[in-house]
Image (tube, rainbow, N blue to C red; front, top):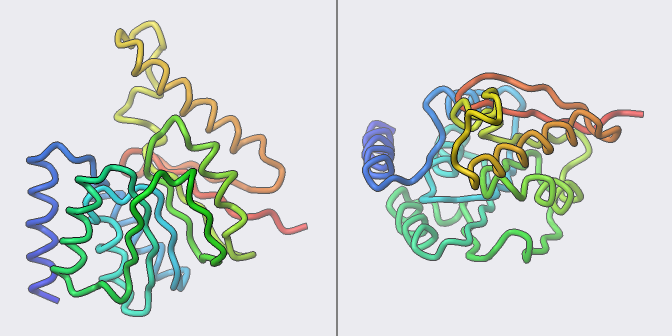
Length: 199
């Protein structure tokens, strides 16, 4: 485990140097603790990047299996290499595709959404059918580096403004969704934790 922790630190350092967005330390701590506390054994991750969060999740629970989807070929190749480095090929399955083109039949204890922020509603709707009855859907970057809380006119970049608007729409979508109950947390870059409502 000492070796794995060292490799994980190196992976995190390299991702930051290469400008690859990975989860904040507080966010990943919350996620891995959540997995242990809720006895999560199967995870579907939308947005692999270089595999940092998938590997972190797998390391904390030796029974955990992760299916993770990435549409950027370079990041996908890097993730495959990293998963191999940690000897986790039997527990982490990487899929190279746009998540919105992927159809899965499996059910998961946890669905973790950390991909193109403008597509969050589509990801949620497409994959919520893959959630176990008492499962969880966690979405990262709900605060998006503090921009979501800023007045819109202060955001000068048009694309960024559009993205922030999409995240706000997603938040409203979760708040008004009568099939799911969602709790919002300021941990890391902001998380939404959604659970199916029990009738």
